[in-house]
Image (cartoon, rainbow, N blue to C red; front, side):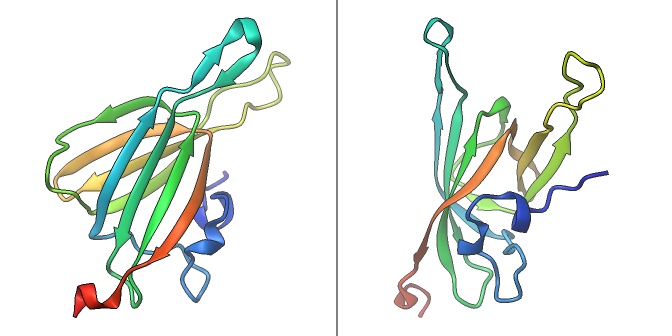
Amino acid sequence: MVIFQPERDVANSALILDTDGSWPNFHDAEMHSLNLWRGDMRPDDNVWIGPVIDTTLELTALMEPFIVMLRFHDCDAIEMSGFNHDNMIFALNFGLEDRGFYADNRTPLPPYITVEFQRSFGVALKFRCFRIEVVERKKIDPAKYA
């Protein structure tokens, strides 16, 4: 059984890995922005770009806090609940979901990546996608925490 490992499976993950090479802790991260782009589906022109979700998060439970922008490609089954001024994330969880087989009935299709932005009381944002990337990492002015 294959397990999703963000350190390995998220494009450009090296930008935000901890000094020991592990994926950072998203507990108590603050969501600064959430942008959903509907994609560009034009079958007549053979254009098949699925919805994209961009998130900007401030990771504060670290020795050196920073802001990270994550991009999720070809998103599907997007659910959002209880979204309000409480922008704290309890956890960011990933998993894999099987999609079946190609027409030969032997070769498995690439799995979906399941994503959950979890609040302290329930899931705030849940979806599946095909690819995740770290777009950017920004330093935070240390004076903010002084």
